[in-house]
Length: 408
Image (tube, rainbow, N blue to C red):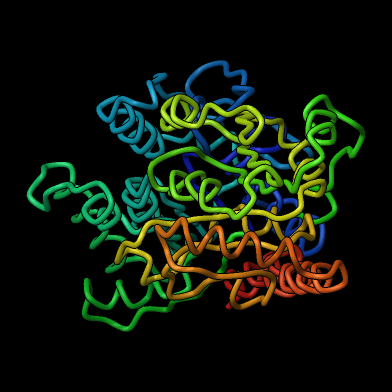
């Protein structure tokens, strides 16, 4: 079986995005264990990459750890430029119509993974003219677009871009043979858009357990943390408005004895400069910026507890599937989750404390509760998270789900 994956933002650990390696690991396992040939079509430029791929022409074939990539040339863009990003989506989609047939084995399945959704068009057109050789087009929902832009970004449903995305969403839901999502309840949204029975499968984000445990040698950051001799509460991930970090950092002032705690933020994003300007106490806060993926596990495992937060928004009624849940559980530390989610992995795993969204007082209470637990109880919570990870979010489990999806 040959499978093509259209995912503009896919990549490998070599590219060090920290977010787009899902299909890399799936492809490795399916090729090795199930003899399924997979080609990942991704963009030649990704603002999340540390190492951009080297390309030569419009389509560049590269093998990374045995996985075949076809890098599709797109223009570089600024992450802050909505027009630039939209243009990159359109160019990526357009060039998928003209993939050189002689260079890559034709597929029997095509997976289209958002964002962007626009590659659904070349996938469906290819199936239509394949004379039955392409048996299935599978559409993966990572974020529910354009509803996320409307409910989180405040966009009008009459905005031209929103209208274009709405049409594309309907086409995907109406004509894809199967739909999968990292969101457990995305099918509830699909049913409001199309009047047909949808073959839906929930396949969450996950992690390659063996390959994600990096070097635990002492790093300057770890040395700094050790010298502070405080209880370390860590957040790792993007630093944007969606991550609700202001409530987390504000919780430090709500602690009964703030001098006992150090808040560590790993990552970068549009909100980082603003937060660093507001929370300037170097004894209480460390903003480490973007940390190499290979170092993240070591830092998380040296923390005392880990934090993830969300705003109180209706979009989360369909669930979430942030990669950091897996990173946190792999580190075997108690987790504080602040959010009003329909499905909260921390609650499901029983590996920490879940509090309401946007509430610094309750976040502070959760931090103090975990810090006062006996070490044996902290280990027990941590192990609950790790076992949940192995059961539901390891790449071994996810690869089996993808195999079933592709062969039934």
